[in-house]
Image (cartoon, rainbow, N blue to C red; front, side, top):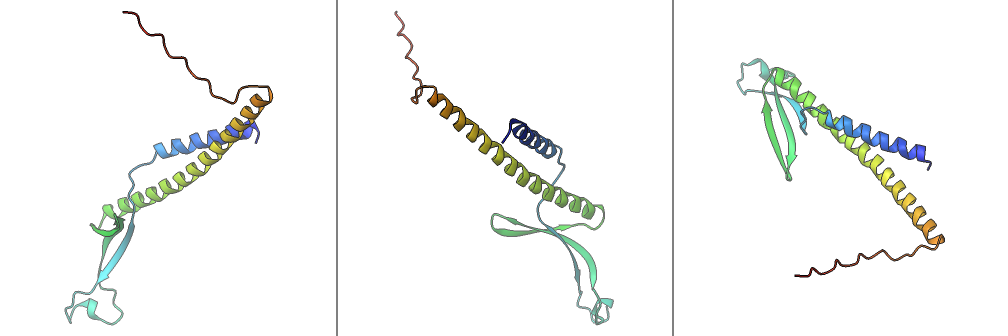
Length: 140
């Protein structure tokens, strides 16, 4: 890979990090509208084919292996919750892309590091790492 392609990968990684930093409020889960029947025989919800009362909104997600459900009040909270869920999905997609690009950058760094070390070996450089000499003991 050329240096220009490597720089493009690094720029893409920085762009993704910038997009991550600009994310707003987010929350995982699924928002579901529920319609329920009240059980009263004369209510409109008891008619055949009736949807029932509602919608009532609930947000469901997994927390440490258990399903947790929160009731979301009707009104602006539903739209806010939908936006937060969309932002969380955007976060996950950006993270997936960031990991992919970062993996490519790391692979290129490894390749360029291997190339540099093989060139150094060809020039007669030592394969052993340099050891620092211990500092002289102080005289008191």
